[in-house]
Image (tube, rainbow, N blue to C red):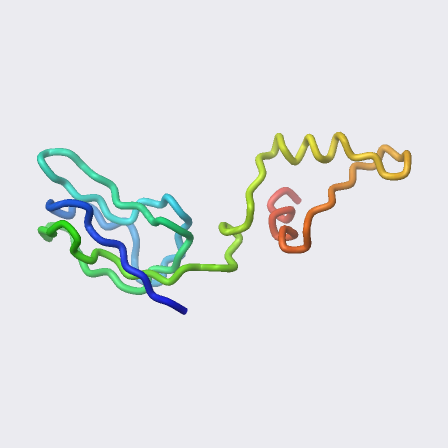
Length: 120
């Protein structure tokens, strides 16, 4: 597995660390909040990942480009599968017609089977 790092986008002070080593987070989850010029700037995960190292604590001053977090991408986690809204799934189910029966049938590629488990 390849370890990647998330760097500070600007100079500022860390005001919150929202994760711990070992946490699994999805893309868009806020990991660290940096305050600069009296404004808070959240630093979020770019992909689904497992946090492997934290290099900051609350109160630490960071420079632009300084490593804040190291992570390992979660390639096969449920959050990496294509997502469908309930409305989209409802459209699939309501429009399904199998050999003339009105039984709702939904056919998804084998890789998306865990996705269906969210709705069962």
